Length: 498
Image (tube, rainbow, N blue to C red):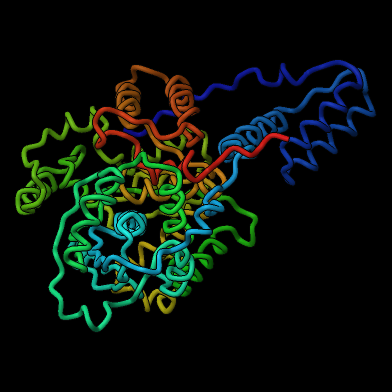
């Protein structure tokens, strides 16, 4: 159903009527606050009218609308205040003196599993694990068996030289096992999920001393979220400084950002739209899809052995907020927040599923871009056969966006939200899907007006931008906030007050 736009013109102009010359000063203040070049002529005209008739100043309807719009636009692009915070991942004096132990107890061979961002998080944990176990880390291998069957190696995605250099004072990293250990059969181990530091210092280190080479079969979520500050800082050094994408990936990503900005003159949103076939099949979310599409997703879910949950109520999933937002829901969400229809949106996603695809989003926001529309065929050619490298390009663009919005939780959303916080609390919007679904259903049934709907959406998300809320420990570790989605206070500190 098309959204009914029943916005009413509030009597904003009444607030802008004041007698005498005092308004001149008010106009100048407003002008400095909005600082939009398009308003210069408007305020010049108003000041000229003020000189001719200083007793009353009244903005025209067009001028009122422009001022109102600019204030709204300034607010929707505004990032959380970060002036009292700074990065704090440098080694302490004690850590510098100790450095990386030269005598190693053995070698860790790590098999990173999952997609690009799950592997990034896992490798960052493995760096900390190697430190705890006094182990030499062999350059991790990347997952070649997941849904996308990507054959990229570590060197194809990351800058190996930088990785080793950044972490050389923390752990020893080698590209391969020394010759004397290459014939040794590694002791294979799946570490316990979300383990405490003592698990690696004691149990796992004993195994390493005994077997000399340990192969970690999985790297996802192998370390607890809440550990000591030294370990948190090391995780961040690995994640944000060590795991740099290789030069060619970063260069193309920055080119795409420049094209979106038109020489620093435009702002843009990066939208992580997780409305892809595998995600919909996994979550059982077939809302608003055809019967044939519903059946195709159901069949895919039953055919994928490692997806344990098979029978899923799609309607119930959506009402609980467990489904990715549809392209149409995203369009309504952004409009309700106040983003104008000419907003540039960079879509971070694979192939969007469903017969309607991106139509609803594109009708409302025609300025949609992807790496495929911004880059030339020749520029993408070196990366076209690697989903991990293409995802790395998306990550680079999304990190630099003015606003990052994600329609569903996942490793990319977690990694980017935390990284953007680390880089100065860049604005990230996390839709409250459960409450939004209820509101949009009421809107579609004409139970609430557009004005009421928009006000509720804005109020609901006013405090949902990332801020210094810290990682909260809960009874069940699976439900607690992931460290990499919020590295405060471990890697972000309050500035010392003078």
